[in-house]
Image (cartoon, rainbow, N blue to C red):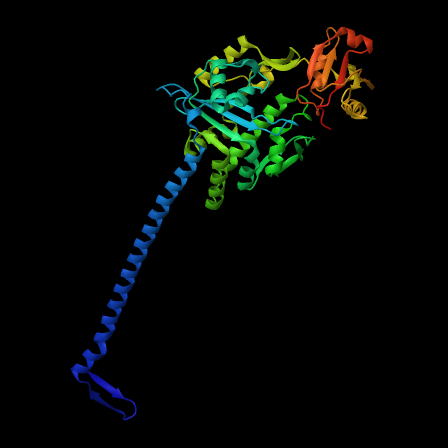
Length: 438
């Protein structure tokens, strides 16, 4: 090989050994560098695979641990096994100890039956009002929500099975006391609220497109005193919120938020379902895919207590299509007349039997603000421990309307008494008792 020396300006022949010495190290170093990177990438791949497997195993057992916290063997024992080719029915129970002033018993505030077709393509929901009059095993005739106070979710499931005649395959019970933790863990729930809610005992909810935080969501599902149709409107709010919440969960992609939601749910929900099955159920209920309705009936005072009396012939017809076709009529077409009288046509005498000075005047002002026509004030002849409503003959519907607007009275006693009503020249007489909470 000829090499030109620029300094000496002459050419010379390089020794062959010099060529080998210059070329060989370059090839050797390149191969060694390539092999090192190949091995490094292989080890990185193996390490990532080990991490993914480890996280998967950890996540599996973490999730199983959370699911184990939600199990309730006593309730699962009264469930019916799902038979091949039959729909799957789940009872959703919402339990609230604080929606009614002074209430300490754990009564079910939400009762919803969810039926999913065998192929999973259709679903329907029937809500049972909390005051539904029924028979509870070992406790006689009661409001259906009392079953939870007597025997928890197990007796609630058994009572609903006997009342409807339907098999119940699964249950989900949500504790309202921890309800807002679930909502906050999701970062809130977006909803459209047509009309602002201002409820003295539940709280406030703004109107419009809003992202409800835990406190606002709890106020929405609790509010009834400010609602035009009381519990019936509250049932609709509860169903609408449930759909919105399930939609929020199903769209969640942030793994850290998902973990927070799972943790909050495991602390406040009891169920026999896995998280994946709950999520599957939620997706079927979200987006308006499920038909929803309320058991047909009307409120009625019986034995001095306010009940929701289900129209059993109409209800049996509803249950037939609910179970066989996962279809129910819409509330607007199904709901019976509530028999509530126009407030402006109702005259009321409010008597103070509580022993608290000025309480009758406070109640009277609230009734006037609610639109009642003529409201008078006086003192009762004796003390009353429980707020009591007396009504004249034929004025039961008026008494029902007034009872629904006594926000400070927890299930006031209601009695027919023509003599008392006549003595005050009115159709309805309210005696405010010591139980009334301002």
